[in-house]
Image 1 (tube, rainbow, N blue to C red):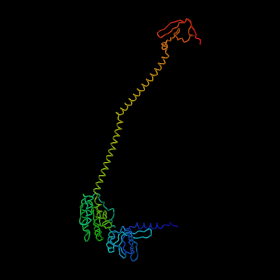
Image 2: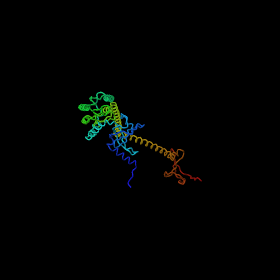
Image 3: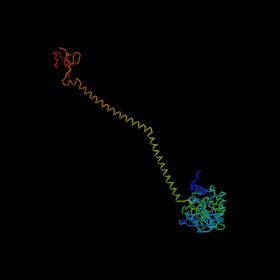
Image 4: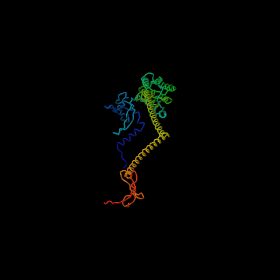
Length: 401
């Protein structure tokens, strides 16, 4: 038996197929409205149908800002959105981003046809997009001389960086001849070697914005050597110019934010970099000073003069220790000598003689220690402290013990 998939897995797989299909992620669908319900959450649930089929649709509350009329039963409309799968019910439906009445269908068909043609030619490729300079000095503007768009751009530019020069080409942005006027403005400003050009106008209906969907405008933007920021309509409005331009801004105000750098923020960043550089320099200076002190100390310790002083000090210490030990040794020897002298004095015959004792010696001068060494009539030498006495032994008497 082959592997069985869960319902959720199957629905999720099908949903991924819808997500990966580029045509289903941005599609226009025309039909008649039926089963229209405005939910308390703000969402709109309805069905699009024609003679042979129907398609469930939903417009969430967040997308209703661009809806300029109330959706009702039986209306013929064109819905821009994406088709996806609602996994819980296993049904696919159209998630509406924009709804317009069918009377404008012809313009949308022209829009889609030109969009596909230019996309096939590569006019939308990112490889052709030029980077917007981060710090422009001169900014060109192609828009109407009066209106909210130019005022917004001026105000925001003045607030962000009053040193940036704005060069306005007062173009016609609506009605007959508007496309040609916009093209002339792009070509003239491109010759002035500006840093960046803003092309746009305020919001309006698709008819009001149609000049920016003309092929000549798209090709002029593509051929322009100066980077171009498109700023057409409101955030939800998309024109052919937006796809060709190097950068799309949702509004003219946003275009000014993107084109003109924030001078105060830039100055603060420079000051921050300056502080960081100063801190890094001071750190490096302190580090190298510390290393220099270390090297200087090592050189001082390794210098001959220091080594000689150290050796002299060591010799002086050794000499002092030797003198100390010699003195100590002499004291010990003197002390011992004094002891020996005392002992010798205690053993010396002279000390005995001083006390009244006498030294008696025989014939050969040998000291007599016993009466057995003397015979009667032997001559005896009696040595006293101050001289000798010669006597004869007349009688020898032994002491009885």
